[in-house]
Amino acid sequence: MDSDTNVGGYVGFFIAFALVLIILYTLFFKLIRVVRRTEVMIIERYGKYHRTLTPGINLLAPFIDSPRVVNWRYAEVVGNRQVVRKMITDRIDLREHVIDCTKQRVISRDLVEIEIDAILYFQILDPKQAVFSIQNLPDALELLTQASTRNIIAQLTLDDTFSSRELINRQLKQQIESDCNRWGVVVHRCEIFNINPPGDIKQAMEIQITEERERRATVLIADGRRESMIVRSRGSAAKIVLDAEGRKVSQLQQAKGNAEAKKLLAKAEARSITAIREAINVVGVKATDYLLTIQYLRSLINSFNSKKGSLCVLIPQTILENISQIGIKK
Image 1 (cartoon, helix red, strand yellow):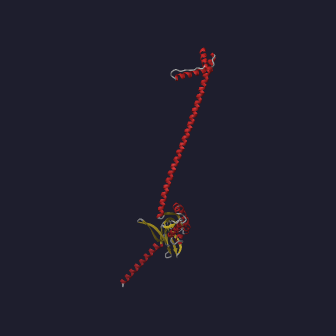
Image 2 (cartoon, one colour; image 1 turned 90 degrees about the vertical axis):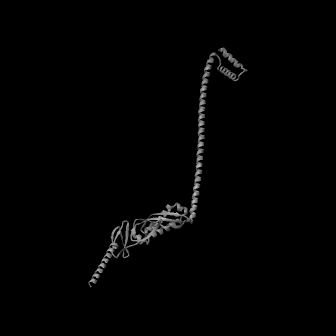
Image 3 (cartoon, rainbow, N blue to C red; image 1 turned 135 degrees about the horizontal axis):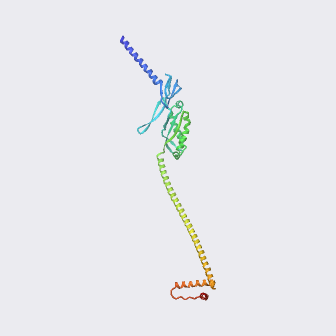
């Protein structure tokens, strides 16, 4: 009887000890919640929103308070590929998040099917709205981004899609901001990550780019030759002008020099004639007769020197009279 009593006492003790452990576990892990920095928790009481737990140690009312869980996902690299993991958590991270939207096929305005994906950077500003306004926030943001991207690309041609990424990013951000504001989320940036056209279109684009580069090279070479010819012709024209200016200046200087020389020679001759006339007038001979006779005699001497041999000369009577007169006077 005593042994049965002892066994019953031990069983009761272990049961009481287990109840105490359960109560302590419940109090510590269920009623005491430690919230880390940049995280919050949404607490419901009787299924209704009660309060938002901030970073630090927080106490919950037993059996009536419970944290609201949300669907979330994150990406991790496994091997050489990126894998998206989904989870259910009661913590809401207030830091900036990034969602790599799944690649999708869209059709441009010129009916070209291209593969495109986008990256979305967002941050939760109102955890209450993010929990109660949408059932699965990451999936909703991805689907909203994909639908908005499809609408924007449908209004652009293939060439505009490649050359207007900034415009697409800006329009995409503007279109999803209104819905994101309703969910307590702010979008910081939307970025088109990849644009992949079909293989045949890509090959045609490469050929087009090659031809365009060759055309530009030909145009540049032709422009260079044209500019070279223009510069050379301008140089030749400038050279001709400068040569003409040089010849003109040279001729002007030469003409001025000849004119000055003739003036000086004329002045010298005038002074010589004046001196001769004064000297001859003293002895009674006309200056004109004297000069005419001297000039004639010089011509005879030059003719005699240029022609070797006998020379028959006819002297006018007037010259003979002048020579005789000059000789008598002397």
